[in-house]
Image (tube, rainbow, N blue to C red):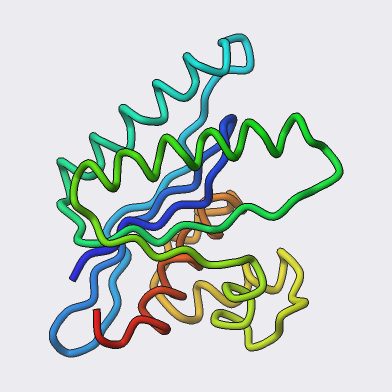
Length: 159
C-alpha cells in the first residue's frame, strides 16, 4: 500500500510517498517540500499546489492521503490560506478516489514520539529512527509530511 502524506501550507507544502510492503516494512519512496512564490496571488499558488498533488498521484498511484488537520493560530490570514490549500489538496485526493485520513498535530506527535507536547526538534529527531530518511532532509515541512504518513500506517491497521 502507498500513502501520499501531506503537511499542508500555501507557501511550503511538505509531501511524502510512503509504501508499506507485505512484510510490514515501511519505505520512504519520495519526499520533498514544494514551494510557491509569495509574489503570486493565492489562487495562483493554489493552482500550482493542485497541479503538484495531481502529478504526485499520477506518478506514484497512492491509495490513501494522510494529511495534517488545521489548527487555529493567532495569524488568521495564514490560517485561511492554509485552509484553502488543504481544500485544494482534499479536492485532488477525492477526485482521484484516494481514501482520506486526517490527523491533528497532537495525534501525529503521539504516534511518532509517544509524547503529545513534543517539539518540532523531537519529531525531526524521531522520524529518521522510524523510517530511512536521507540525511539531507532537513525541512520541517517535509519531515512533518513523513510523520503524518507514519501516523496513518500506525493508526489505520485495516487499511
